[in-house]
Image 1 (cartoon, rainbow, N blue to C red):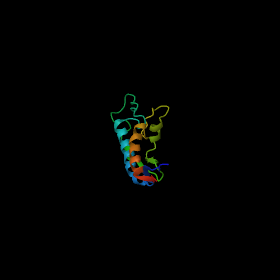
Image 2 (cartoon, rainbow, N blue to C red):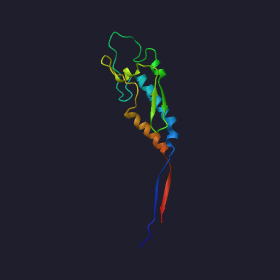
Image 3 (cartoon, rainbow, N blue to C red):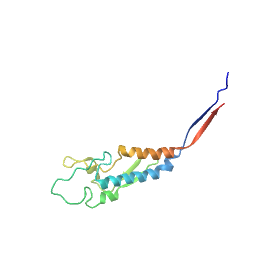
Image 4 (tube, one colour):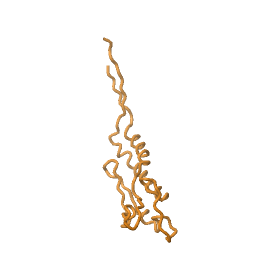
Length: 136
């Protein structure tokens, strides 16, 4: 019977991938947040925020003073893939969820287009190097 030989190479997981990638991912979350504000769009769906009813002011939606945008801070949790947002304005939840008299203008969240960007960073940080197994 002939001898069987095989070489198998598999990705080597980086068990500390979260520590090595959370600052990069956190910046991506913050950039996504700012981009959706500048586009005046829902950060999850990408749809434009519902315009105000006339007559209204000429300032951009949700930016009369800029307080809500400027006070929103993101923090990466110690648990992988968990980000927390905080703001010191109490009216943010009314815009996020809408009310019976006000349309929803969601300003927090991550959408499906964000998933691909996120996955590329995670894959880059999670799989570093290779394991090679030799079977005689």
